[in-house]
Image (tube, rainbow, N blue to C red; front, top):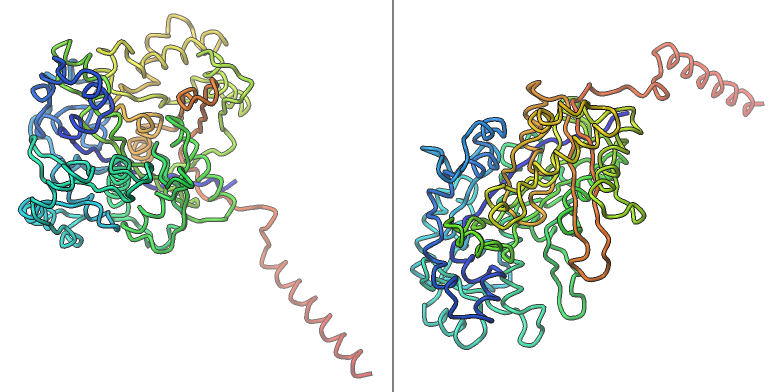
Length: 513
């Protein structure tokens, strides 16, 4: 069977310190409920400068400048062992500073909702004019008077955009009365769009196919766009494709909390394998709500605010090219309604059951990618090292099923897992961060396969207490397979042509009589 392939992946981070203060849910709620709190007073001093964000080892792993294996060799705390001379641009994407991102938001805005102060706009337009991917769009960064920006924020309900606490722009509301088109939601949605745009631009840069051959876009972040009559109507996907220049694509938004990207990856695989589309782009931008989500715990423990970056990614799923890793659409894990929410039940559904059905053991999978959050973000908040916890449970399941000796369990974690290196942006850590490194490792012979595992908590929407999850195995490409049923030899072709000519000659003779 010719399975679809993961052809390319890209990853971006956007360092947004002022957005942490003004747009992260933890901080906005704190201002509403306890505006004079010690946390808010100390917040600004807890924000890292851009160069430290770039030099942070997990961030360098996320954009592809170091491998997860290299990350695991760097002593923790990684905060104290940053990478000297780290580059903001990586093999898979980049770490973008906040000021340039405001310019990108303006570029991505087609309803004139983003208003930038003129002096700031001029400065950013000059910066983006030398950006390797955005220089052709830099002229779209135009400005207006500071008085207009200030009036929109002070009197018309606009959301301010700040640099080091200084107002440099704003996002306006899109409707006077519709709460779904408020400035708050417009900012969230423009952030999702713009951060996905830059991820998508990195993916198509240097792509070995014409971007017009990308026929479908599945956007799988956690925002819902729409108005009062259709709150989650969409379509972020097509809006992203429009800016990137995917003129031959249509698309749709797909939502599933943290498991959304894995659902999107499997759906993209099915669409490609069915032949409906040849190339499907799975893409997602970042969530402002999760900026500084665990900030209180970080500051209490003397750490900087670690959730200071938006995340984004893009993955291209294509028809089998005989080279890129294949997506095994016959090895799919799915957490059904009847499975139950215990950790063991979840991992049996997502890992053990699909592998057993395919005649494989847990130990046959080289690497698992469940929830890849950076542990230095989650541990201070009491959530522990989430990836390692998952690997321990997967290993324990292998022990229980007789596939692994108990004494080998500690080594299983290192051999079959990676340290977490993704931002806690909800949907971003769940499985997909492994794909970029996984593609390279399979092509170079470091790995034979890896499993993408997406898990999600559906109770957040207050519609069900059910858990959710899906998984798919990705493995080395064994080359294009000939379909034996449809293969016809040259001799058979000759015979069919001769028979057809004889039948036609007989027909002509019968007609002449």
